[in-house]
Image (cartoon, rainbow over all chains, first blue to last red; front, side, top):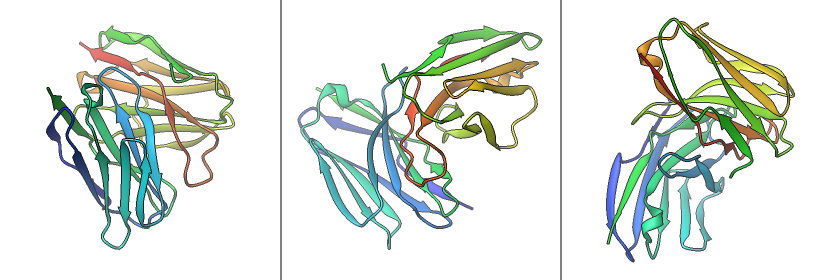
Length: 109
Length: 115
């Protein structure tokens, strides 16, 4: 079966750095997405990785290692508004999106 | 505002009621999706429409009936639901479904409670 694993919940401090991991076992790979979802709001696109390496976008970076079936989302200089759920999703060989259950990130002052 | 609007935002219904969820997108996208989101579970894809044609139905019970009259509008008709159908129903759109890296634009969802 296909599986995406990410921690259920994480807590971090305002101003700090946090890394949210995502590991996957899927039938093929055609890219990995990260979405952010604030409570009661729509999930919004953060990043897409299809090649190995780190992609930086402001305070957020996303890393991919296809050989390890692993990605992480790195959030720097955390702000209270970063409190949200972060969803990892992999595009499999049939171009189907396989979703993780999401990581709820709690930021404390 | 994402460009994908869902109504109603909240809905409470009895098991014998009939109701509909509506989704509208103003992005010029050709593909629209219904997802079910339950607490601490992955998003479940329910239906996909591409250029108004249904291309996917992920073994969804017949008490859920989708309708896509045009590329901008999508409905989910609900009938004789069960309490376990209580969830957040998310609508999404994308340019198309064929290519791999389709960025989805989601609506804020309709929170459904079945009593």
